[in-house]
Image 1: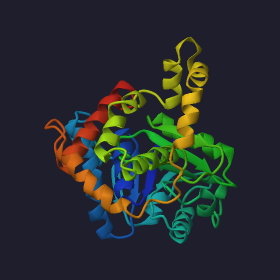
Image 2 (image 1 turned 60 degrees about the vertical axis):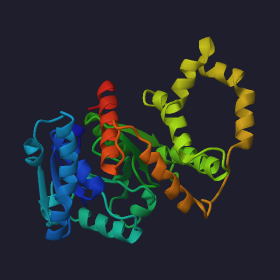
Image 3 (image 1 turned 90 degrees about the horizontal axis):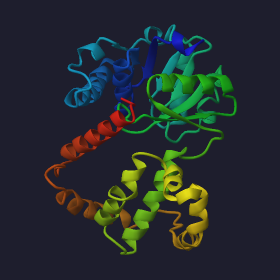
Image 4 (image 1 turned 45 degrees about the horizontal axis):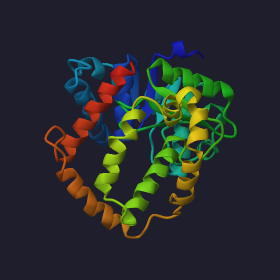
Length: 319
């Protein structure tokens, strides 16, 4: 099987992730079969697809959603959804037993060399594939929200996943303007969430210790390193900031400062009990202080976020 041969893909489930994925891959020209378990699920899923399409229309990516909807077919019949399909994005709940049932359904109809990519954000792929007939073709293909915009896909194989499957999946995602990264070993949280949680843990610690407000911590990130990180990751930014010696120069010049921060940085193992109430209280003034260009309601703030993401993706030529 070659990536060029994949003209139709399938979604197993179409909630926030699956609906967004369906819209995205249809936008990119693929036919998308969306399998859900009931007619009621179809009606609940369609607004998730439309939400993504509305964003594309709002920001001029498409003039209408007609061409996207023409590429998407909903069905409650697994034979119709999976027969002859060589790539499936599974978007089910984080429940190992449920994922085993989903794999069993798909394997009744998929070709033997079809790839099953789970959107799982927590269930190890080795567990997902534990009862599969063909565990060698199962991976995690973990997206980041909103999946219909953000290019990142974290690919992780399990103990029995074949190298060929990983290579094909990476080629497939890249062909359709996603940005796949590959884990060489299974790791809780994959790559991006581990990086994000390191940052989030430190923000929680700073706020709980009274060092600063949540709003100031967010602003420190947004208007400092966050702007640079919209272009490149930390390593490349240090390379650019390290003078003639680049990243190596940073290690030399800033080693002592880095050691001092490492020695003092949070190593908390649990979220503090007071954090739920404290964070809820502190997010309210942060939202209230946003300027009119952003807005103060969640829909307005989300729209501003999407506009920023789309502008950056166009600069990266990813959309």
